[in-house]
Length: 474
Image (cartoon, rainbow, N blue to C red; front, side, top):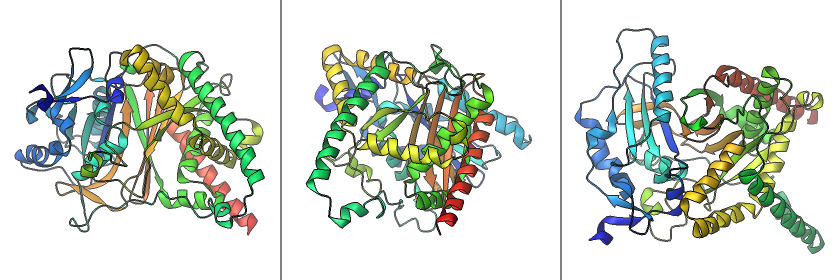
């Protein structure tokens, strides 16, 4: 009987739902029209579409006889998972903006009950500056990573233009320019050998530095890193900013880099500008950002959930990611006058680390630590990695078509990760022709609007510089 209702929890699920570390993902769908529906609709949608997606949505995590954690199937009481906050009616937009901001801030620090499945849906029916209403999904990170949870979320949505067609996604393939050397086919053996040894040196350096960041080396105390204990238990502040994906693609094409390089460079440059504006004494302090890498062999789009949960799937469900710290380039007079430096620097750093075996070694280290000292010790190690770095950066690819949830067109979407012991976290997702950045910061320590303004300035400066550089070359 136990084998029928219990399923082993993966090591990563145990790390992310432990006494030392508990992370959640909050995804916000902004409705284009007022949210109106019959009371039975949310329950029917959850019962017929969402919960059947994966057994974890109807399971709780329990501790077995030998101390290992397992998923236990339970009966879902849907009323416990649907929250609809009530506020005064006929108030100005600014009032509901503040209500929604406070609601999300409080939601970020609320703990899940371990006695029911680890997800909730919050329906905010009041209009804000960004939407006619908001539907908020809160899911515990132990259920799966962003790729898995995005796949589950998209299973509940339909294309607005033609619901019978599947949503499509931008290609993940690299540009031909980046692969031009491979196509020429003239790389000789004596050129490959130095690259091989350079790869070994880079791997050893990256892995060694990553391990030290997790245990001994902490970033300097700066305007974006308080270093205080218990940051993860304080209510954060969330702000978002939308950028034109077409303009970002122009920068990408002119500099021959990736969209990921472009947005990473913009965030880093904007962050350094914020640090300089707030405290010039520490603006060039030692800072690093944790960049999350998906370890799946990604193709052109998300797989269906049925494909993810299939045995031996190439793109399996779960938490399949690793993280590596990257140093934030310092802001000097020369670099301030050349904002493209931060794009080029981000490109070199990410390309080197992505091709480094340190990503693989980090995963093996966590596995070894789990076998020797257990999941709680491994969770402490990950907690230390997060606490010793200043910020986290993660991004996802969204659909290129407009989508709808229960006949409510989605105007925009964004997501954040909560529960990390960091003063700043930046998450990025694309949708149709826009790219949305969500910035979560430690309340009363980082000025969220000033940081957003600095990132906006960085974006405009980099765009102008990229366009001008293209004109000079032509």
